[in-house]
Length: 471
Image 1 (cartoon, helix red, strand yellow):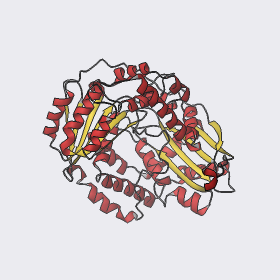
Image 2 (tube, helix red, strand yellow; image 1 turned 120 degrees about the horizontal axis):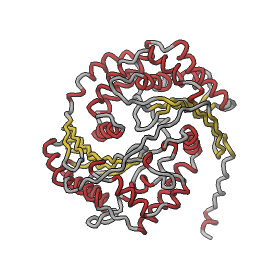
Image 3 (cartoon, rainbow, N blue to C red; image 1 turned 180 degrees about the horizontal axis):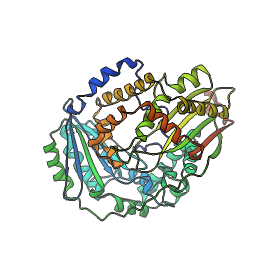
Image 4 (spheres, rainbow, N blue to C red; image 1 turned 90 degrees about the horizontal axis):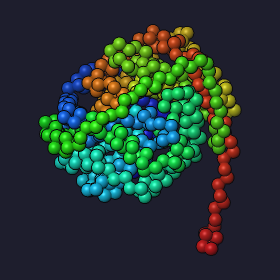
């Protein structure tokens, strides 16, 4: 079943790997030095515009094969929100030569796994299989790149699945609902304001023609790239790609117009009432993302600030707000420095029993103010950098993670070859730069605050006794 990337940031999954001892930083730094030599990456562009990116990793006889399309929910139009994700589901409904569900059945028969996901910036499909099955995976993906069957009855059924997915993941989850409303208020004009899964009213009115138009508009080899990571020879992969993908013709792509978000003129607040056990507070500050890997400074400093505030169990939020002050049952920060659109730095938490969302907001603000006024200590910064490097090292254990890294960088216009340069820039962040971004971007003029006001939880239906159940 296709798996949508959730709109809500991964507040519960810290970006940085836990690493308690900052004294490990020199060791990790030494380990990082030869990382680029562990696996080589090669690229070729086919005549139809499709790019093939291959990273050789010969530690296991498997391969990750991913197809990335340069279209996500931010490319949708009003009235048709959710169509990118709906089409992702329909991509598993077959072609004239491979019936509905056959794609996944053949992957499973090969001993592999497959899935797909939609984001604001892209849509991606992947298979992880024994290396001998790579040719078959390419053949299947090339087939549905151009010959997708969009049966009306299948569309109606899959649309019901997506609408139920929205109910389960957003409408019935107070925190997801709060985040959806926060995003819609923080962004006034940019398409990031729309949920990836779409508004329910739009889903109810989508048609097969909408999906077909989206497919014909964006699913072309010159709007896609293939990432292959695993126990392969890059020249052999290029030959397979030429054999299977070169038959798909390039098409004229739409011209994208700028969609800049206008400057925010003051603090915005909203409150959502929903059944829940605890209040929740979300604070969203407008922040830049990487546009020039070499010359940008602030996005790297913001990444490190997120790590200092909430990157590990001993970070400021956990130490001060959760354990010492007992102000919150959880408090964290989230920031992603890469995106096609504008960036947001999130502060998030749930107050402890007897505490209010207003008190938690004051506590979060106080932690940021402390950084603004006094900066960060050298050992804090060293620890944050140790977390980052540990994450880079452990990521190499997964071929899929390596493929994801390449694909996601490319999706936002950052060449994958600059990944190591990004890491170098993060390592070079200074305490002064962290203090500077805290002063520059954590202002009320750039802030949107959302509060979840808990309502009574619905009572569970009474359990029937075994005897009653028989009647």
